[in-house]
Structures are given as C-alpha cells and as structure tokens.
Length: 348
Ligand code: PMP
Image (cartoon, rainbow, N blue to C red; front, side, top):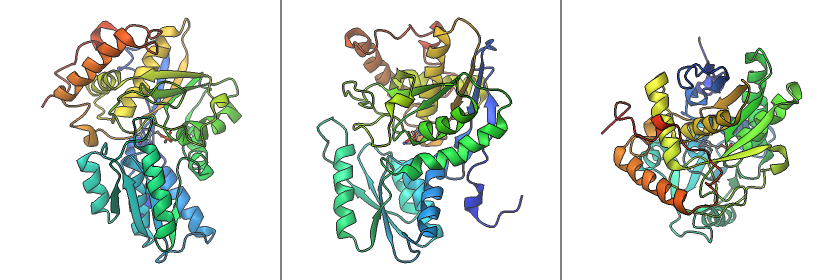
C-alpha cells in the first residue's frame, strides 16, 4: 500500500473474534482493533477528523492558529501529530496522572505541555484542566480550543469512522455494543451509526469505578482513558441501555488474560471493556453476539496493568471497596481463574 500522508493510515482497523479469551463460548465476542491506529489509539479518529474539518471550514488556519486541548494522553498524542501535519502550534493541558512516557511522546511530537496540579471538588483534575484551557484560549494569540467533551465533531468522527466501517465489516446484527466511556464520543458515534442498521442492538457503557459519569460517588482510580470526574456535555444517558462499572484491578486482570489467551498487549481500558463483557455474558441465558473495541496499545501501561506491584495495590483497593461499596454489591463474583494475577502473562 502506498499512501501520500501518514494520516491516511488512520482508520480501516480490523475486527477480531476473541474466541480464546472467552473459552470458545457459544456467544460471539468481536473486538475492533483501534489500537492499530498509527498514533496508537482510537483518538486518532477525532483528532484527524476535527482538525481537517476545522481547516476545511476556515476556522483553523495552518501556520497561524494555536490549538489548545485538555487530554489524558491519547488525544494529546493524536492532536500533536495532526498539528505537525498542518504546522499548527499545540498546547496540551495535562494533569499529574499522565504517565511520564506519554508526556515524553507528546513533547517529542512538538507540543507544549501545561500541567495543572490542583484537584477539583470531585477529587479529579478535569475541572481544573478545563478552567486552565479556558484561560489559555483567551490569552494565547489565535488560541483555539478543540473541546473534546462538548464538540459534536468528536462523536461524528466515530459515526463516520468506526461506525461506517463496522457496517461493512459485520455480516450479521450484533446484540450488544460494549464500550468504555470518557467523553462518550466513541460509544455514541458508533452506536448512532450501528442502530440505523441494527435497531434492536443494546448499548452498554463501561465506566470506571470512582468515575462520576453515571452519578456514582467519586473515589480513587488510576487507569487513564475511561471514566471522568465531570459529566461531559456530549453524554446522552437516554441512548445507553446499561452501565457496567469496572475497577482498575478487574481491568488489569482482563488485560493480562488478553495477553495470555490472544497475545494482544492492550491498554487498561481494553481490559475494562473485556471485564465488562465477562460480566454481561454472566447475565445471559442464551448465546448472543457482542461487539467491543480495544482503544489503545499496552506499551504505555507497562508500569500499570503489566506491573505486579501496581496490580497488587489495585487488588487491595478492589478488596476494600468490595467490603464497603454499594456500587459493587450487584457485581457477580469474578471467575476463579481471574482472582489470581497470572504471573506467566507479564512480570517485571
Ligand atoms: N479508552 C482510551 C484508552 C481512551 O484514551 C479513551 C479516551 N479518553 C477512551 C477509552 C474513551 O473514549 P471516549 O472519550 O470517546 O469516550
């Protein structure tokens, strides 16, 4: 394949059956491999789509505008790549939860880093980051805030992107769409497109324990990617049939099982999505077809889900929240094989 621009490699990601992960269950679980995008994540989609649309409409002018955004990492990496393409300056507002590796990648891609350090009232950094972005938008010459939490082009990029591709890739209707949520752009964009073809499909959102997206109490959580400490303007809960909460430990176990069974080294929210599928399957009485998505690669999580010390501390949080939390009471017990970290998967 000959492409004229690296950005042409965004999208057209394959869909894989996860038969070994789910022990050749009668149900079928398919995963769209967004981790194969050139920037390493699903966020290549909105970054490319939004920057291109803004340039086409004249709202962003190459060599002139200064793009500003708040991001936990993946969107920042994707935007930094797009901004290099059009010679746009880019300032990325981040918080201390960002991994040192992501910071280095974003800086290496030529972006300016603006780190907030104060937590907001929900115990996260989202409000502080948004306030900082608004400040920068007003004070930086030709500043332009992409605003992934409220910009409809975020969900539209997934509607036209993964949604359109999936219609061609899937041979039969799916019963459930199960996806991690932060801005909700990925889930809503894909579900809006797929529901046109499969109106009976149920939409299942996967949220992190400790996130406030669906009115739960905030609590400590470490995995970046899914969950939020503030409800984004894009989120429309009436389009979601079910919410499944997954904590850091459950996500890490599913990531490790994905390595062990399928040889796929994926990021934390891929584990969250797969742990949610396990919980959903446990509720099913008849075989069904489930579609999920693996949002990013695992290399950026080597000191989290693939580090035994980190997993042990996540396990301690998991056990203490099981004792005290109302939220976790309806969750069925983990299958026996998942209650142990599988050392053969990866150890440091
Ligand atoms: N997983 C990962 C790794 C992500 O970076 C994100 C985006 N923060 C998501 C899932 C959730 O996607 P969205 O913001 O579209 O809800």
